[in-house]
Image 1 (cartoon, rainbow, N blue to C red):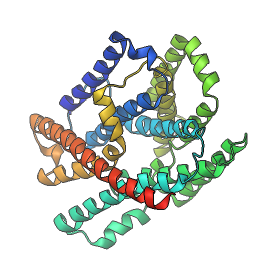
Image 2: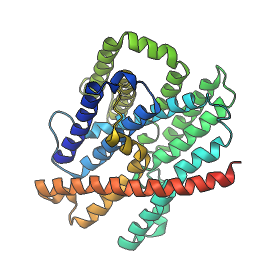
Image 3: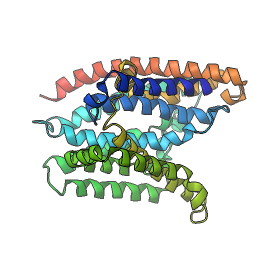
Image 4: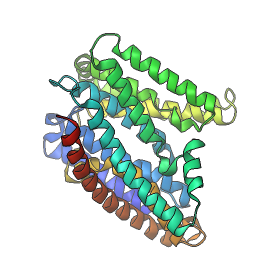
Length: 352
């Protein structure tokens, strides 16, 4: 997947160069809607690459996209928490809050489930009971645990912030702690809880945005270096922590550190860099569907390639990776447009 990796690098470099040379960098910087939407697009593609990496055997040197799973999801939780707090200052924000947010999450997910059912029963002949069992065993299709985590976070925010007080964050924190304890007890995979703490970090940042943003703006270079050092330490931490943690616990600590440090780095970088442009803005607007449908697309191509994608030659893998990227973007765009239409009609009926 060297070609698709290079394509993403080019988009990132272009976004930074465009921000600096056109003068929109500082003017449109900060954790604005446009800027955070743009970075969500890059994060969604990076998460797709992290999962695609498990199906290929050729990578770019120096950096592994497998690390982008925890960084990307942690940043999504962080930006969601921040965005909710900032939006809650609007008048009557909580009127129809639950239907609006739940439908935006669930309708694309239902479309994904239909696609998976067609693939599993129409192509693989998988019994419907196996499809249901994937939810019971804690490994829902297409990494869709994130859907349930989002729904829970949105509910916690509604519960804690309807009447905005200093105790709102504690209500959310208690709810997140209960979530973590529940899935530890169930012994479900650690992705259910290892980065969800970033949602609380986003809430805290949003509640203190003026002070935090002013401090980062004043000490930008120092904060940027600190954030980069923290991420680098998190990335190499397994080499130093293997004497203290055994087996899966080592990678759990590593993933938590990667998620938190990655989210903080994004929060710092965006203070003086506006990466919004036609490419990143487009990807950002379909970022949720990019996340949802990339696993489905990868699975379709796995079925086409006998023996799996990893069994193919180098350039065959590169070609399949490009097809996966293009197909995922196209399907995500179609599904996002369809979801938007269905959601808007449903909200008009439910929220008056």
